[in-house]
Image 1 (cartoon, helix red, strand yellow):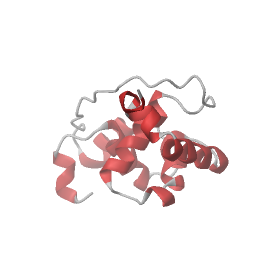
Image 2: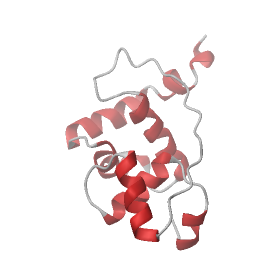
Image 3: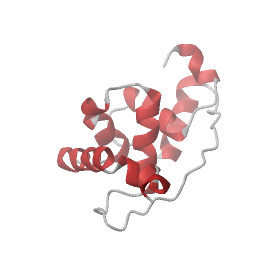
Length: 121
């Protein structure tokens, strides 16, 4: 993200990823907004996201709507190759390394089932 990108509306994932580069560790959305405002002197503009509900009943507790939305946005952002994304996942979602690897594995294995269930019919 270059310096001019801070003037564009950010998604929640972009904000969390951008701020966590300055402050290591897991951040929640409200804390990231405050840190952004402190860092740049104005509050971030946030793009409203349409989140499609996913059926997460068959997955471990840490694989939820927030995690799957983060994974999709991280992939679409192109910030990192998804095979190397475990550090991003750990930082943004507050997971340990094993949970981050499991989340990434589920995301890759069940991508079609999660995001395009109509194609399985």
